[in-house]
Image 1 (cartoon, helix red, strand yellow):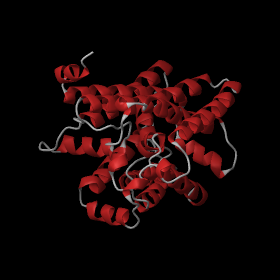
Image 2: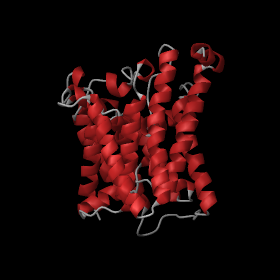
Image 3: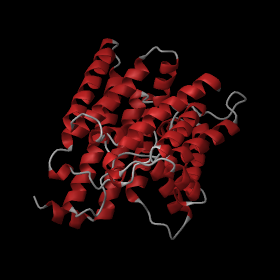
Image 4: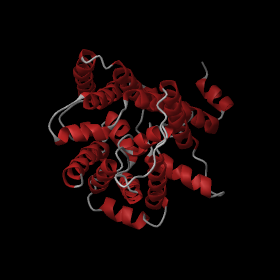
Length: 344
């Protein structure tokens, strides 16, 4: 099949929107089915006792790593031009940003992607958190906080050859496929034993959505001479870019990011309606508005400092073993543990 001609006929911009919608829809359905949430893993770590939610998140991560490593074989799976690979690796950004994001994630009872899922079920606190997240992310991404972001990221940068773990650790790329397989098998065994079928199915969909996102965008990049860059699911850049597109007529409409957000919300709404889980919730004295404004700000700024959120770095970036993403995931968890210990 002449893929180059097919991409030309469809158009690269409509194709980005379709890909974003498909990736977001799959993620939204999977995350809602499984109650996919990194915060629950952090809470289990804080008491050193893993429950079903932790194995669910780790199962999704294992699926993402395993299938990403499987699919990105050969020329059409080349992700060398992906931003997470080509950008000069910062460690200070992931450390500081990861800590901020982890703290905000615990305050808001869920990361940015989790807020979309909660919004679909009628949680108005999630709406405020998402709005604050998008505004603060845009300020750090392309607004008044850009100098601060650059200063934070410049505190500690690595040389270009260290953008992926296999470039400075004594492991081959195939080793990470094995790591993903081991994580997947162990977590699947636990979930099957507990008959957690919806968690198993949902987390598998989430992991596959991440892997297929990498493969589909790299495939299009290969056959379109990099008219779009390889990438997978992320919500920080998508939220920031979509916000500026909405409020400014001159800003470009980033179709992949907008498709991700819309698709995720639609997927979550579909599952919520099927399950009849809609329940309107607002602010209470136990859950004050200021808490969620602070949480959204910490997550928005932190995710841009770290160049990824709990999904963009924690799943998508870690699936390709990007150094900055793995560091971000570690410090999101550490920030969450600190928050669980001192702010609860």
